[in-house]
Image (tube, rainbow, N blue to C red; front, top):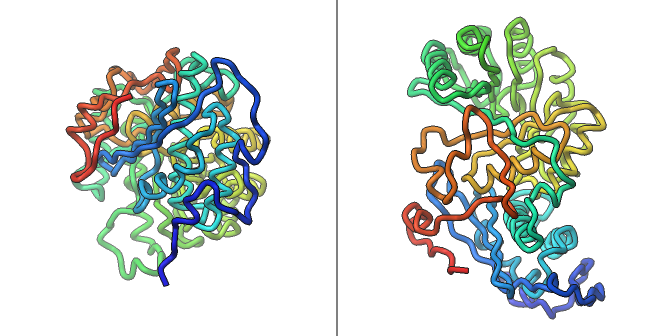
Amino acid sequence: MPIDYSQLSDPNAEYTMRDLSSETMGVTADRGPRDVEITDVQTTMVDGNYPWTLVRVYTDAGVVGTGEAYWGAGVPELVERLKPFIVGENPLDIDRLYEHMVQKMSGEGSIAGVTIHAVSGIEIALHDLAGKLLDVPAYQLLGGKYRDDVRVYCDLHTEDEADPQACADEAERVVADLGYDAIKFDLDVPSGHEKDSANRHLSQPEIEHKAEIVRATTERVGETAEVAFDCHWSFTGGSAKRLAEEIEPLDVWWLEDPVPPENHDVQREVTQSTTTPIAVGENVYRKHGQRRLLEEQAVDIIAPDVPRVGGMRETKKIADLADTYYIPVAMHNVGSPIATMASAQVGAAIPNALAVEYHSYELGWWEDLVEEDGLIEDGSMAIPEKPGLGLTLDLDAVEEYKVEGETVFDEA
């Protein structure tokens, strides 16, 4: 029998989980000009180098906040499912609304996955909205800033990603022409020596090929840029250890996600077996998911993805925990300017920010989605002093680049 969602979507329905709505909690104080209610939540998907899911939260004050949810099948539908739980609520109660959404969606998997993607998109929009209502930048809502700009590292690709010299050439071009002093390449690329990729084992020729990519790029730009390498959870623990050991003499910023994310014990063993810095965290959800990585010192660099991990405040909580272990934060990011700026706002507000990823250097219209320009200059993102995220969505550009069949947001 199909599930009947009508009862679950009814804000007046009875629930067995903890209810954190303002009505149930008795939140009735008159806040004067801060007495604002959410009236609607909408999404539009943009056809970028990933299907970016933009989220807008509307209020009876005429102020709108814009956020972004990490992509994934069903995310817009999940945002729609969340709407009844926050319409009528005060958008300034960000922490309570976040917990309220997680509680209400517990039956649909609010520990991880696309449910948390949807919650994250709304949470980011709430920060943009609250900043506009209070006339402060989003970083101020997170406790103020440590820095005026945040370092950005550029994720690079070539037509032949398996060619070490092609990678070195692209590294040299991007560093010289675009001004980045931090870049990343993929290492889970074909070497021509594969026997059976399903078993995740790397033969010695495969390891030597990957080490040659590392060697060629670091030697070419090592004096002017830091270079990281992403494995996308592809290798066995033993192969990851051998690869990390092979590249120890080279100037590697970090080796990212060398083993699958489910087994923290293997991750810890890999990290503690090598002096090559290991970065992990993109595929782990909420502070609860990141906790073991940090407490067991299974990472050298933690890499949460803001519109995926639970949003801006959740990332701040992860960063605070990481700081107790003196671990820096390099935020994974494959999003539009909205997600990128949300990540940068968090980076401004935490002491241990290392960098924010930029994944769209080959996409010529990335910046067209917002009215502001010059967002990334010389490998750095300046933090605006304008309220909220400090960006203004260009609805004409959203219309132009939307996913086919999508409906663009209503005007404010």
